[in-house]
Amino acid sequence: MPFNFAQIFQDDLITSMVRKTAYGLATTCVLGAAAYAGYCVAAPEKHQLRHYRHPELNDQIEKVLDSLKITDDQLEQIMHLLEEEMNAGLSPLTHHQAIVKMFPTYVRNIPNGTEIGQVLALDLGGTNFRVLLIDLRGNSRIELTSKIFLIPQSVMIGDGKRLFRHLAECLHEFMQKERILNTGVCYPIGFTFSFPCQQEGLASARLTAWTKGFDCSGVVNEDVVKLLQDAIDEKRINAKCVALINDTVGTLMACAYKDPSTAIGLILGTGTNACYIENLDKVGTWKGDYNEPKQVIINMEWGAFGDNGRLNLIRTKYDEEVDLSSMNPGKQIFEKMISGMYMGEIVRLIILDLLQQELLFLGHRDTYGDYKTPLYNRGGFYTKFVSTVEIDEGIQFSNTRRVLEDIGIRNPTYDDCAIVRHICRQVSKRAAKLAAAGLAVLINRIGRSNITVGVDGSLYRYHPRFKHNMERCMETLINKSIQFKLTLSDDGSGKGAAMVACLADDSLCKKSVVHNETTRD
Ligand code: BGC
Image (cartoon, rainbow, N blue to C red; front, side, top):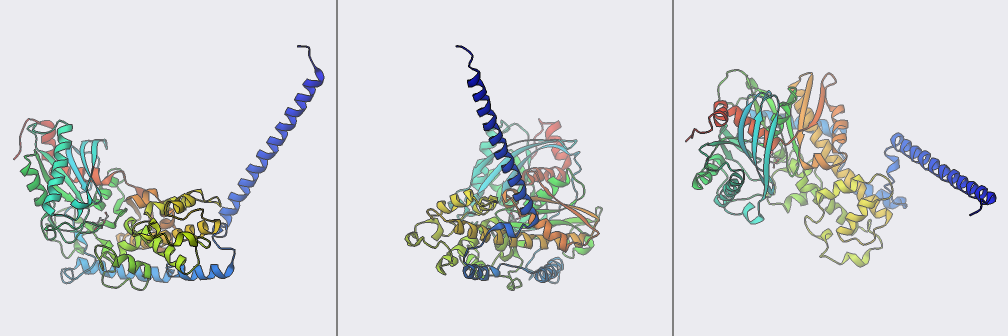
């Protein structure tokens, strides 16, 4: 083909023009995005575009959501109330009637990373049950294998014996798969049982109440370690439960394994609770010895804060409704305002309220009547939706739209999405503030200059702003001389239980590794 200069010139010219236009567009986009980002950072509240374009509707919506707002004065008041309840729980004179139970856990030593042993851990606290085989190798090295089993709803609310038999069957299956059944070694078990228990020792714990949707008969007031061990022995499994811990304790332990300034364990998941290291001289209910270290981890069971009405100053009609329709009305009031089991439901009730007041989903009258959609059904708005919605930052609302379609709102408008995101933000921010106030009480009370909080739980892990919202609030409530840090704890419920089991009977763990031919009874 002959050279055609005119064509080449033309092509070059076109290419260069296209390129220039593309560069121009790209630059505009980058500058635009940068300007928008700058604007968002500079004016975080304003950019949320959360309002209807009708000012009078905005005002009415704000009025509804005002009930969720907690002022700084109220937060201080809540902190003061919590500290009073804590002292009541720790005193032998008032412990019996106390709402925040402050159970001594009998865990007094914090791991230092040198522990060695092969231990089984069981973790029960939600709809899943986990079995783990953990190898503590010293030098802060841990190896583990695990398997998750489902706890069917019928077992969660059935006969207690059946629950523990089910746990033993899962353990049997796991040990068989790992080829550690009938080996002649009796494996120590650390049992993470994430419900309120009055402990009389590491391996003795009476359940005081079920929470989080469990309600098995014949377990309250019974020794949970014994119930588990009976089921294990019935199946002739070569394992012995040497320690029971709460998930908050596991979280603290697993975090302390890596960071010695850890003094608090916090769970923000299906339920919520915290534990911390307390000096024995402040624990009037302590029945153990006073040897060194003169400290013990206290399982606060702070979820019950407010069960005597002391949080009524901040409770809304939505909180009351969530509580009334729960399996344990009047119980776990603080937990019901914070944790993952209830957060989605609070949002759903607010959405329904706004809808009934004709402030939301205008123009969706045709779908109002479909009572089969999740929007109208208890539990229909999952807590994970709150996180999904809040991941939406700008004005596209791609996540929010998907969530709204999932709950039965077809073709939601921009306004619908903006309002629903605003509701989610208010509900999760309130929860973060309440958890922050609780932590602030603990951090100020412990008073060390440097404190790490080990945190775990799905709400904390997956919500895009929870940590940030908590930290912002904590900064205003914690004494300025104290440095604090929130650290995500890595599988505390599993590893923490193994560490406690190992510390509980150090020789036992070593025996199972070193002389793995010996049988224990
Ligand atoms: C239980 C606590 C537990 C918390 C987090 C609460 O419902 O009472 O024992 O630590 O949930 O799992």
